[in-house]
Image (cartoon, rainbow, N blue to C red; front, top):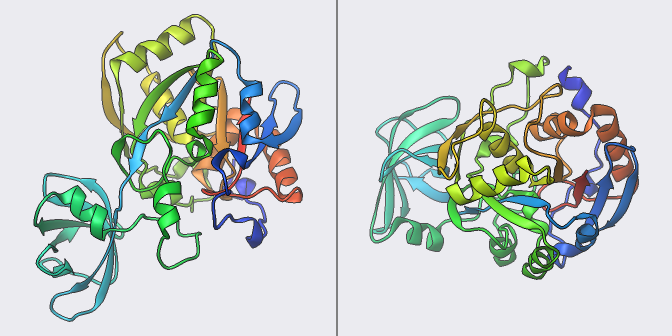
Length: 344
């Protein structure tokens, strides 16, 4: 399929700039792959579509304040850095907005946090070695910013963003973008889901800036995904494996969870009870054979994005294009702070 197949016109007013007033009051579209039927409701209604014995897999990565604003020591020129992955205790792979060169010194907070540009590492990416006083994550929590997606048009995140651009089950720090399908869950809804007899399992996939990376090649198969780190405990591996063997539905919350699960079982099932750590650059396109995921909860995605391609691979291209067309006509909100879709 060509890139143009995954393009559509989206009114700018449907790009959500703020989250819904209450997490589980966002709208929900329910798409049935077998019948082609499409229904509408609120996210809290999702419990009506879950069955006792279902396994719901969620991504428990935690977004950290990965955006830093500072100045070049020599010139005083402004720069902005997005931390991506740590290479050692002090060196990070970063995206940098502003012109820099190897050896350049940067200052973020006088006498607290500074950095030195080491070398270029790919398009727009640099290695930066940081120096700080105290605990690095604590320094970031105090002086860094939540890295909101580029389509949320405000210069700086609000206090509400710090709380709402995070799932209620976030645990492991490492993401620069939220697993947005999980943003709709409340603690109360999670409790009701468990009381219904739905089993929950967690994967950790640290979402990187590559989630916003557009496909630019007309032949989508030539697109290269950025690698992202994942981890799954032995306990959760066993929960997933048992559910699959018993024929119970596995419901992935988000495209990141889907990619982590399908990566785990891409070649062969992981050993029983064994913790799995690794990196994935899996690009799921139409024709992909899903071995694990039976149902998917996801948001409405950007045109020409790998996320939209994945959803089409899971649900069928025609059905998803029909659902997206209906979502636009009905005024559903798109992207990270937008509404949700359950695909069964």
